[in-house]
Structures are given as structure tokens and as C-alpha cells.
Length: 161
Image 1: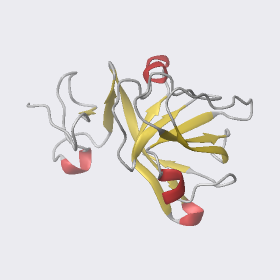
Image 2: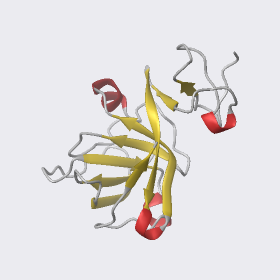
Image 3: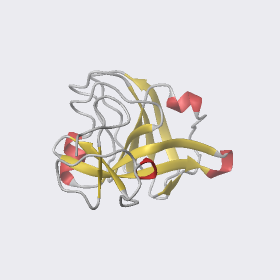
């Protein structure tokens, strides 16, 4: 199979594929597993959709779940940007940095129940967020997504696989 993806630099790996076989998201790839994974660095991340049910807003439908040591370590390092609707959910994490990154990101801090604790819109490279024991996970999004989705402290997020 020839590697391909929804846009330059993004490739998708399904559960029933070997490393090196890439495909489009499951809904656009007939005959493939329904669980798509997003390739980051040397590993892959399971993809989830993040919504705000009370506002009927989809924050992102291509959010990588960084819940392993390797995926949390690499995060967005090496990426040249994020498209609206994509990002990563890092858990557990009590704060993030943008050291060595090449682009700004929107950062959303979440508590254990996925309630928004704090937001950092347009966090530029070479910055740190504050660290708190109340923060359990962090959602990194394309710049402008916090404003576009009207994300604010107190919003309850939901994950869909």
C-alpha cells in the first residue's frame, strides 16, 4: 500500500495494519478496522472525538490520545502545525511546555472528570503552562480553537471513540 493521508505530514494506521501501512481515517477507508490511529513520532495514538455536549460543539474529531510514556514524551515535537479539528489529549499531565515547537498551540487543562480547569489560547513556542495538582490531563489544539469552540473554564468535555 502506498502511504497516504488526509493532508501533508499526517498518516493514519488502523488496528489491522502493520507498521508502515498507512491509510485514511476508517470512515473514508472501506474494509478497514473502525479504530484509526494517528502516527506521531515513532509510535501511534488512538484517535478520539472531543465534544462539549452542553454547547453541542465538536472540539476535534482527530484528537490523538497520548496515554503512554512514549506518546507523552514526543507529543507534538517535530510537527510543523495542526489543522483545526486535530490535536492531542495528554493524560496524565499536570502542565505542558512548548519547548522546541515550531508553532503556537491552544492548551486546555482538564480535571479528572474532563471538566475544563484553565485555558491558554495561542501559547507560543518556548513557553510553559502553570502546573497544578488539580490538572489531570491537557488538550493541545490548533491555535484559535479555544475561541472558535468557545471553550471556557467549567465546560464539561466528552470523549467518543
